[in-house]
Image (cartoon, rainbow, N blue to C red):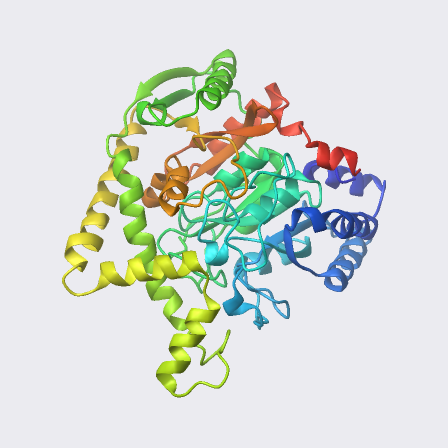
Length: 486
């Protein structure tokens, strides 16, 4: 059961091969047996999961089952979930029980999914390796000495290891696509505003976006059908109709125009990663697509612009965690200032403190125009680069990361860690959709192919990815960890 995709599980449930309760019990048993080594979950919701599975079985028996009814998944622990601990991977929220559901959680529950729990993550989504969590690092099931990527590393590792068939992550600068690449699964970051951010604990409000992580593009399409749509509670959520993202999956790729940004194939890209990506692109050519080189000339400004804008927004968003209303509070404060200072010093980890300090500095008097305003101007140029490129081609392709998953503890320098996001950050600055699909290996560590589209072209991206997955079997490869513990 744990080796099936969501689409395959739906067919099995419809055929009566097993019930949702049996499937849920099987996966909960795998989590109990295997997650001690991976550390991919922070909270497992046994009772709620079994109750939801029973409700799904009842709905199916009554002829009221939908495409996702009875399918298990996991939620990154950044989505508020009613009556469940919601931590954002931080000591600051270790005692926070959410009083309401995020819109994404609510929509997936209405669709009949069964949440098995909340997955581990870099604290407040700040990191590229999932080593910044208050609950300890997550390990990559392909190689337990390697990181799974971040910040949605717990979600990616859980899917890759067969603990859940799908999970929901968030992407602020690559936090769905990079861990998907490192763990050999499929991950989609939708267009900014396509999926509601209500109830998703904010890191950088103009960049954060929720998206699906699963084994196949077809599974991601099924999940996006349920997740996408306008939400009156989120002023950044676009009022736009939601297509059926599964309708175009079977469309042939003949005539598709693919652009290869020359900036994504230069210095810093590992030669074995480049070789795997170029072999994947040859598959698209065999399917009838044409390939040409394009340029995104402001790419080299993406990391400095991002690491001004994102910390600035984080500084503002995280100011609410002050030890007064909710979250961690220090013991025996002397006065209000002592309460603020010690609660925040004790509650936040080093990387979060680093980004708060950077953001507060760039927003301060005398530096706002020099740093924050200038970064926003650069952001506009980066967005225009993509718009210009999509005048020439239908999609862009390149690596999701310059290297495969690196060893745990290997990138202790924050700047070297930030450079891991060189190919993913600009997409968030531009607000366009992007996804990573498995496209090969370097040794035993997966390589991800990144596919990018213009705003609101998720259906095309999913079609392109699905056709690639019909022609290859990279997405069907399983780590020895999952096979040996079947």
